[in-house]
View 1 (cartoon, rainbow, N blue to C red):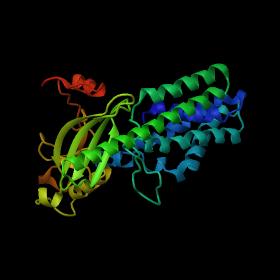
View 2 (view 1 turned 90 degrees about the horizontal axis):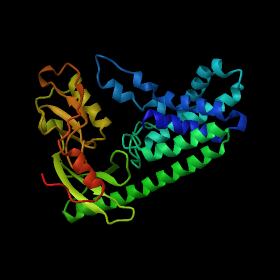
View 3 (view 1 turned 45 degrees about the vertical axis):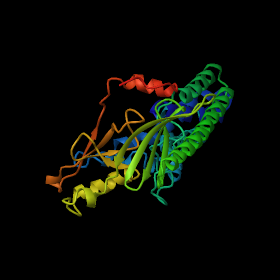
Length: 337
């Protein structure tokens, strides 16, 4: 998730395990330790544009790295806090804070390498958006009250509320998944893979992508808590198969290798951009849950297969995106195009 929420969760867990006279120091230690895992964003190479996204949420977020990350955070903070806290207690708080990073990121759709080095699969439970202000607010209020009154109680309550919110997300995910699989069956499709993920900042509107044969079918599903569910049919995309779609691609070349890496990063949800030539996109993400409007992709220069693919991001916004998004979020009819 975003850095602020990562830090707040780490601060909350550290506060929850602190004594009254340790609450403020624990919050700071937990906050710093929680965001330290995202230092992997500094791993980059000008010659290899995919290196950065390949190693973000990688080994620094794995369960086995928690003791190392917690120790590093404690060593960094020790010169600043040694007069206020013993190293053993500081280590407890940094371990608690650091332990939250990988687990929280695994709750999103992007996923993280929790089981590295034993399993290199990106684990993504897709039960909360990468940015969710409700979840963040629970933690922010809890940490603030804990700092104000120097008590661990608010953090414990905040963690319970945050945990309950994640359980709601898991339940909503289950409901969206059932609707998506039912939708495929109604259309006479054999769904080989089904992905549902919450859209930005809510647990009501979900993006559904299922693969049937060589096609991705994309829809928006509005899961009401106290209202009728609604499906907004979306678009389709042809699954990219390198051997079929780009037979001129040189096997074993750096470009060919980068395409394989992009397949791994995108969990094989890869298609060609419908409006840009020689650009591969991650079908899981879009500006609108019914569209194939990519957030990022790789630009393939087939004439220079010995060069790395260029990682590109897009922020093109259809003129009526806000109106259409809000209509779907509220379960209303879409405005006329």
